Length: 372
Image 1 (cartoon, rainbow, N blue to C red):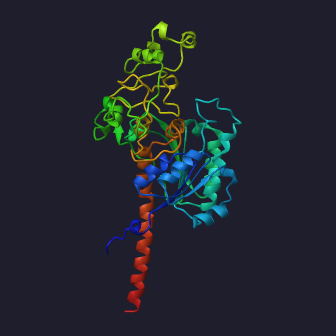
Image 2 (cartoon, rainbow, N blue to C red):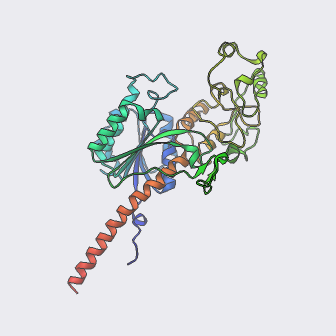
Image 3 (spheres, rainbow, N blue to C red):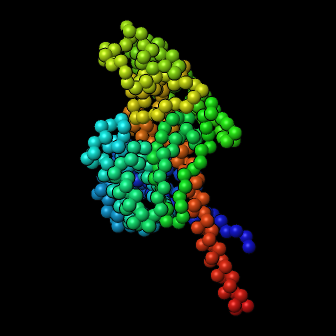
């Protein structure tokens, strides 16, 4: 009997909660899923989602105000295969104050409200690694297990999946159709090659991502730079590849940095051509916020360069001002990481789909035999 391909007739569907610009959605669609709805509170993120996904339901506003019966009626379905999303993480992030009672720590409850209502076969929640050591995670896991999900959690490093950026994310998976698994790395540090990982690709680099772009920003297609002051340009020129604020001479070092002899070594840092970038955050256009100086040109990276480092396709549309686009890009899940996770989860869905098809075909064949 010829094997029936379930996905020829039905592409697995998903809803993206707290979707932002849609980095998760892009990667999951590249893996073979179909986005049918998304939510976010940010107006410009929602415009971006609508510009790139014209046939989906985009719910803009406070997620806690969404009536799920009304939402599912407008969506035209009461079930989906997959729910994904990253509840805002500022309450957990090591960059913030990590306040125990931060209300943003509770937005995962809205995520789980959708899971309980739609009962998807699988779910994916992404967040900062610190969530896995929080009391909230234990509650999330307990709620999910009570709903019938098997839960597996792991911190994934984006650079191990072909993303030219060192960025770690906690990926929480839940499944009702078998044990969910995280993707195995496809890339490794070229300095750590050995007999066990020699089949892996070397980490993607900044050069791989942006080496073909003009050194001078064109002002088009988001290859847009800042207008630095003469003093800023002198500071940029003083930082060597791989260097940071500690490489500035005294006459160019701001007084606040002179008083602060210790601290982050990525501030005012310059990227290396032949290494991955450090984490791209929302204010990558400000070198005083992190390691955002171009490897060669004396300027911060452009919006297009940051989008490349987040592995967004060049034809992806970002709506809003430069600052609003940068915020969307910096908050996104790297598309290539999402694609790797999606490919792994698709394998979990396929056997279930195929077994349903075989069961139906075998039953028909048996009935036909009885009446032959």
